[in-house]
Image (tube, rainbow, N blue to C red):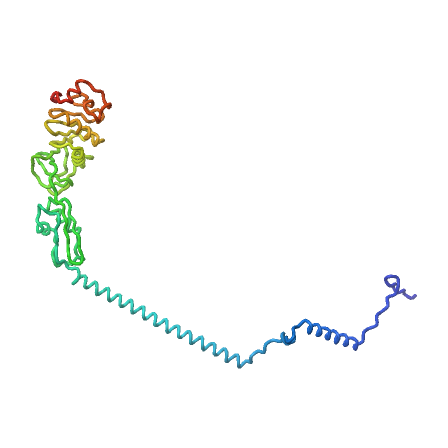
Length: 353
């Protein structure tokens, strides 16, 4: 039995195309090449090199040429490296020379400063009246010929202050290149402190200048001083009392209250001040001391003698338990006035008991 051949698609047998001959293929390739060349000539500008020439790589140097080029590059690199090292070496040498010169200059200046330069040729003293310049210079330990760089100013100040009790402040300064200047502020007696039968005079800076009594100066009692030694700073053994004498006397002086003879600090919360002709100002504590003395100064314009004025409440000062505010124009309206207090303000008050 013979097999049947499958029917071609579309219902008809497919005809085979005849194979192209080798000559036809060659002719086709030549035709394509000619067409492409014609297209390139049309698209390439006139005078441009053929595309095959543009795509052709540049000729490479031969091996000997490459070796000569590499050798020249290496030699140039080595030359630059050696030259840079030489320059760096010279720069480093210059820096060392500068450092060495600076060290030598510093050494020379140091030697000269400590031997020849800045030697003291003169010592001047200013602000002195009680003491002579020689009396002030002697305990300081300062002498001409000393080098200013070796002088301890603070130590000289301490020696002067310890030796001379009437020196409240001292300053020793160096005036370069060859002078020393000593400036002093001499003390003045301002008040006395009496304790256990010993009386000491004290300056405005709180420095004890000497022992002994002197008329015309206020006397502080009840102070409880730690020591009453000339040259020492006045200090109380009771807390809160050390600065009270200075504060009270400064405030009273500022308000115009003069003639103070005695300040009692036995109780620092019940301070009393005696002044004038048997007049006592009762202050209480130190609080509001400015107002108390301001009112006290006005009251003293009317109360001349033998009276105790209570200033513990400065808004209601009283004399012998009588209100005197009505007699003071600056205090009108701060307290009630009576005919009796007005009479006292006119100077007719009874002596204090």
